[in-house]
Amino acid sequence: MLSKYFLITAALVIALTASAWATDPSLTLIDVAGAGTDVSGDGLVVTGNAGYYGPCFTWTELGGVVYIDGYGGFVTTSFDGSNVSANLEDGGMEYAGYWLGGTNWQNLGGIGGSSGNSVSTNYDISGDGLTVVGLAWVDAGTAHAFQWTDGTGMVDLGSLGGESSRANAISGDGTTVVGWDQDPNTGWWRGAKWVNGVEELLDPAGACGDAHGVNHDGSIIVGGGHPDYYDHAYMWNATDGFVDLGVLSGWNYMADGYDVSNDGRVVVGYSGAFMDEHAAIWTEATGLVRLADYLADLGVTVPTDWTLKFANAVSDDGTVIVGYAQDLMWNQKPFVAVIPPIDPLAEIVANGETETLNVNYGDNVVIDVSLDPSFVEGSNADWWLFASTPFGIHHYNLSNGWVPGLMTTFRGPAVPLSNKEVFNGAGLPVGAYFFYFGIDMEMGNGVMDLDKAYWDTVTVFVQ
Image (cartoon, rainbow, N blue to C red; front, top):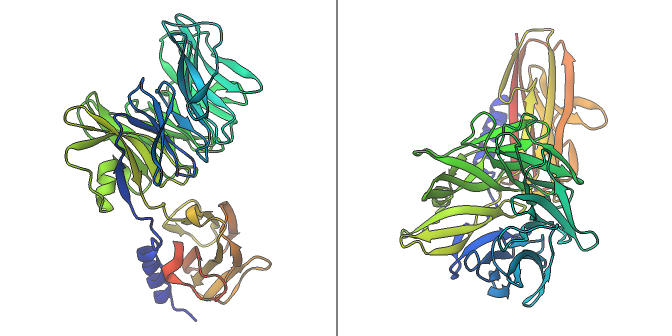
């Protein structure tokens, strides 16, 4: 039987060895005078522009830069990089456009108006490449968010107060569009979302700034202008509401979240002030930090004469980040940063406490477990859920609940698990209870393989 000392030691070993399969980190400056504006969901294709009004390009590690014409701006791409949307020039006017291959583009049209030489502007494309969103002019002074498909053409998404709006991004599944809606009284840009075409503000009071990025299923949204700290970046979801992502330290600095990984564990954007911007990354472990510093901690050095200015997009798994860098002479180049995947996250909590819970005899105790499998999702694993108690080791059996002894709880694929209740009761005898939950990736041998494991623990003291 395992002793309590061994269990605690094992948990520490696991914490030190959980990053066993890291992707080699790197930074590439693409030899184009322009910006990287998007990356395919699978992280293999980068899109960008050779100057804001310059031609569009695609880039892959093997194929390098391929120019595809177009009119620059935000050059966005689908999950596999085969579909691209950007802007084009037609008859002296600027329109949102859809790439048809080679240097051929489809004009997506407008919604009836124009302002100067602009009719419509591209901002994003869905994961399947079938839906494009952006801004189109109603008249010379008012613009609205639009959504385009080949079947519907360009659809005006409107606004809540009769003023302007803009679509900045669309979820990978095409159901959720995010952007801003202009307050009719103040002119303020309020964060907004359109779900299946129906608009609502992220903050009912309209106190948050515009939304810039959204994950695949529309459940996580990022932007700038937290309702309580307007110079801070934010992340929003329906359960937690607004999460403050912070701001870098500096005079008059602001921060904005531009894109987010599918699981919400990596957010990229920028923080800074005019002419002093820095590409930024947020993870739960690091908070908001300069991307250059994050890379440096991974052993990757940014050339001393270049500054990573804006991180515009991140791949669905959070490992490939694109944006642009600038040198001392204001020359710009797209960059591609590769970072290791964020480790799978196993969590176990007691009455909502993540580390230690102190209760009196007779108090009710609820144990919940969660798993974000990250890059091991779908891979076979041994699932472990057990406790060291005053009356010995017990493990959780899917059929019988808590039973004496130490065995795997389940053998099978690592899949997402959210707040699964595994214990709910009162009357635990007085003493210390050490609960452990995790997976190891060497399925079937009945042994906790510490070098391939992801683990969490919580302690309950009953007095």
